[in-house]
Length: 397
Image (cartoon, rainbow, N blue to C red; front, top):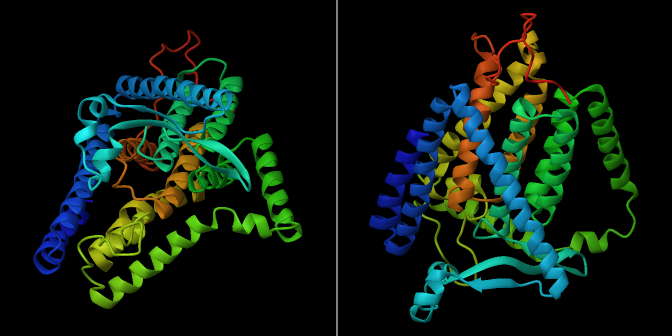
């Protein structure tokens, strides 16, 4: 990760500023790099801190409280939007009340800070307008990532320390997925469903494996026999087409100009409503840092954790069997983050990015404990029962 940060800094300065002569885009690249660096520092700090059971429990409890509070805000906004039949819920921020009139239209990021947006109108289904939740983030996709991370941490807290786990964990899983659905974010919702199927097939209890298998079979059967798929294919086609056109153009432009070191920045061009290479972590890093940055980001975010997951799945032990419920939650989140990174920039939404790096610390720590030689200790601080038999805090659901 440190090599990736240095690579992006050098390419932004040399190719973006000195050679390209784009000072504003260079500043944008530095802003994204600052978020990435902050996330890396957060990852290292949290990974060391959660080695302590008390600190780990405290962080998970904070995420649980944050998730409960966030879902209350989300569903309150949904109810208010439908009650008022007003799908654009916005109020001026304190900054907007004080300085909103003097912010020019040429500064869109600053202009966005003058308004607190709770919902925005969008098409939930073909031809059906719905309020799209965008709280706790600059846009709905960041909100969806925040919900996924906080919800997963809440599930871990309930699994490790909560009471009535057999009922509370499934209830919060349902709450999590329906809350993600309110953001109308296909990447996170699709990634979460894919992760849930894969994780339950690998680490689920027999009933969970049956349900996951049934869901997978139904999905496979429904695809070739689906009727009238024209509207489904056209649903929000403008968004999908513009994204993939931007991805293809960014890759072609980078290959043509500097495939090894990249462009250093994500340039803005006339006729394109987003910067070249935006809305995908992998395309973005290839555009800015070329093949070197792309290789580093794939190695850090994909290959390293994928190798650890393969080891855990291929070599099951008693320690892993006791932690199957925890691993199921972590693998579900891992797959959801991978899918989200394919369609969003991890160095753009600051709050969501930091939460993703915090969750990455929990995933790394969980995998290292399972793969490494250290004996696993439940994170519960309760005393052992009088019989001397240690109660497992990883009761499977």
